[in-house]
Length: 290
Image (cartoon, rainbow, N blue to C red):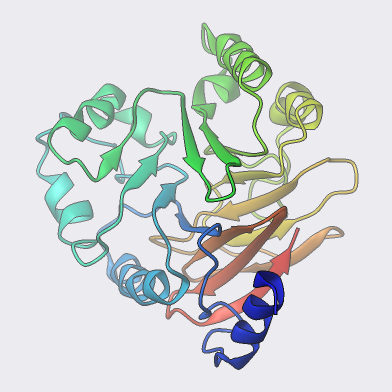
């Protein structure tokens, strides 16, 4: 029996406890959690955090990606702001995973650079800059690249916003990857409160299509959505329900939509990318192969 057949037989024999993901993962697999709009300090955030601990164990998640709005309502004043303890450290103390985080619009109300320097105080927190690239080496020798953007200046038309797009284009051109994911705070596609972003569709979408990015992850909408618009080469994951909820709905190209708290788990296995969405209690709402 070769390795592929052995692995298939082994997986078939393992019971599934969360709709297909509590399996023995292949060493080449990567899984990580995605949460956004979380730093409110309220009961929904705490319930989601507890559920993330259980799901992280079941799915063997190796890190967390935050889609921004990390501290409500006005970000932080410094890397020693007491909100780091009350709205991050104490709530996620049982989730012993590295976090890769971007800025949201509420984070810009405070001192955005303090969220970058906070990494010096807490090694679990990763925000190398307002843009960053995180390359994850896989057992097969392939690389999964996650690239973080700061979309607030883009949405506001602030000075220098085009340089982010130039950086993204240059990064994916000079260092091509076997699979890439881009994360920004604002949704490009949404059937929630804000709807599609014409700015991101006009300026960011062409680069994602050009480089065959597989997934665009975002927050801002306080809900959970997965959208596959046939006009795009990529899918859109909205994960912005880490600390609260806002009404949402299904649209013409929705795979799923719900509110009242939640998070996602992304898994890469070979050339396959899958997304599973969970409610605030950690119950799977569905798994989708993209």
